[in-house]
Length: 194
Image 1: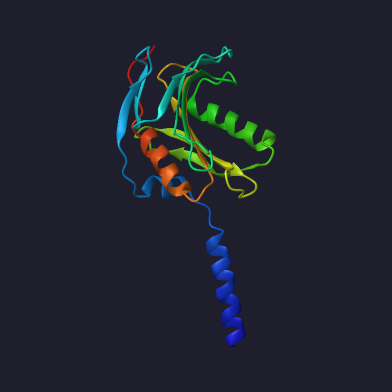
Image 2: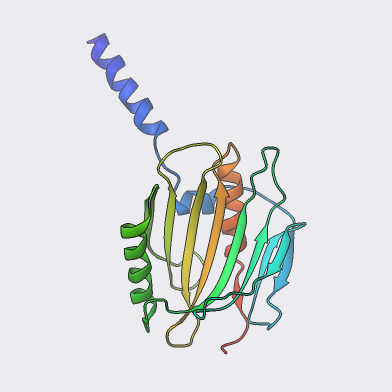
């Protein structure tokens, strides 16, 4: 009987240690940080990002990407950075509604992502409005691999969406860093409908 008890305990320890973090766990992880407000130069949106992060307005060669901003942390002791990326896009799949755009993106990831796995996906109200999210991570738990949570939001214009992405390196600070990214994305505010 002692052997069975130890065996069951070992199974529980192994299965608990393999649990993956979810969007809600990251969103609920307690962390405080100084913030700064940034806005896209067209005044299309604003967001609060961690203070002292670098921010860059992006220019894209892709006709489907209307505008965007990337914000990045300073490299950690191993050279890894965390990134917030916000893009306003025309549907890549010529979809007119939010759910169809999400399903199109999910299908692409399921069928074309090598060395990545989907942790979870679905609808969420985490950003204080209806959105869909995709949470992926590398197949291996190698230190420095990038865990990504992307949100797709409706812009108010048919066939045009916002893609908000949090990318954090899988380091010992993953929970804290991803929580900072998610808390920042929760402050996203669309300023105009154009």
